[in-house]
Length: 355
Image (cartoon, rainbow, N blue to C red; front, side):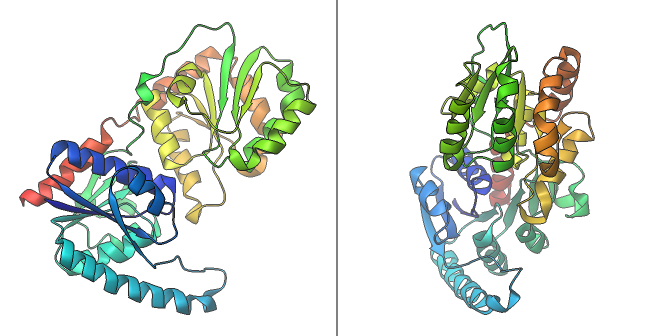
């Protein structure tokens, strides 16, 4: 069978796409898989690294703040759809899989016009623009949150969760007399979270807790300088990137994190108590919607980005010393975990080939 997978732009789209491809290949070792991405975007590098072929389209996002600049964007969209038609005619996919992002819109719309059944994967609790535009063309829509009927037809929705890194459950925890606070802002880091930790370093240095502070590469130098200026506190580990995330998660009693779809899926799978600080710099504020899906079930604590400087560290230091509340958050977030998501999505994709 031939499977066409399209989407990208951010790691939040690329990782699920590659995970679905891996699951398809496990279930169907003879599968032919082709990715379609957007030229100049992250997927053009990450997908070949994962061992798959990818073709880039000249598609770009619309400029919402300066609409008059969208003439060239529309021209590139038209060119992308012509190219997508050529790709689909030559590759002859049995099913198309769209995971969101610019390229997904062009490729999946053309695939549907050409009679190819398509499956959408929506990572967030608030549906993205691309998937909303494609919803009428989709045969099935795999989602990570309940209540997505407000965006998609109920009969098309399948609750599968988001694929997460395969080795996360392999982490090992070692005994410690100190509570462990893990602060993560994604591979690029989170400015607001970093600023809150920097300001609180003198306070954290006095506390009987271990802090693992992943700053992200672009913020590391300034954060490390602040750590040195605070006396290089031994109970605060400052690093730009964590290559051993399974062990770091296993050791953590409490996690401070952004509220991206992949991060939340990982926290649910591992049952980690968390304080979520949604990024305000994402389309349609979808990270707040992701976070609120947990907060409403008493499965996480929310600190808004604008309040992080004043509230974040104090709330974390207070919460990490309350084992009963930590256990309640652990129990509730674990109930929201969706296991084997990539395999379940792949199985839904393969059902369409049988039809």
